[in-house]
Image 1 (cartoon, rainbow, N blue to C red):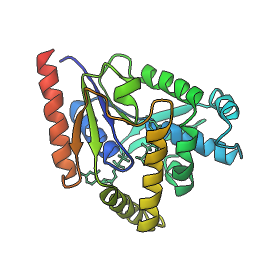
Image 2 (cartoon, helix red, strand yellow):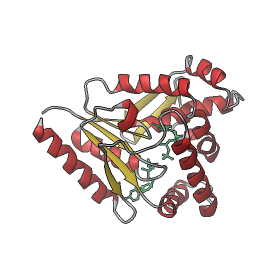
Image 3 (cartoon, helix red, strand yellow):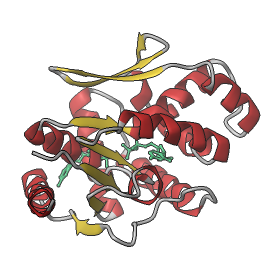
Image 4 (spheres, protein in one colour):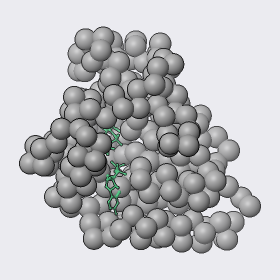
Length: 225
Ligand code: CDP
Ligand code: CDP
């Protein structure tokens, strides 16, 4: 059967990676979490005490940085220069700095180049902020997931508590809203729905319901090819 590309975009904690992983598994496609790549670079910048506003320094380190997304039985693992940083990239320090790193045009160009390389040949589900608009503009299925900021903060809060991470709901709400604002207002490839993307408001939908909607869109497209 023809393998297609599926682009899933949306604001923080809308459920993109959770549903993208399940859809990829169901279709036996590869899943690519582009946010993890920006997070890995942010972690390296913080560890190297590089200013997240210094585009030239960031691009210099990115050019000498290997970021790998590996698939394991326990889900996706993220490697930064051969070190497993799957957990470290999810700290609030990384979350609160990543949007500054992701603002820079040259950083984005290099990340997009790597992401497009991963996607050669199709059979991918990729999630992020600019997948439908820039990374995979010809993706056969484009979805834009939304949910209220309250719902998204609640989801992240619950997830943090389950993982044993410290979590403050009100602070999370503010941090998520600020990150969305920076991501939506940046000059290069801002967070926005592609004109041909299907918008799904997941506020009152279960993970299963969102997965079913995306699977139906994918099956429809595969039948048309
Ligand atoms: O999982 P969560 O929604 O918290 O964020 P993420 O997908 O891990 O992305 C982290 C950050 O990376 C975003 O807030 C954006 O600043 C940036 N990002 C981006 O600019 N473009 C992408 N394609 C993916 C992420
Ligand atoms: O990737 P993104 O930041 O958009 O969100 P996520 O990390 O996939 O999801 C954030 C949390 O919301 C996870 O704990 C999910 O289990 C939960 N959730 C969801 O993803 N979708 C729903 N419809 C309901 C809850």
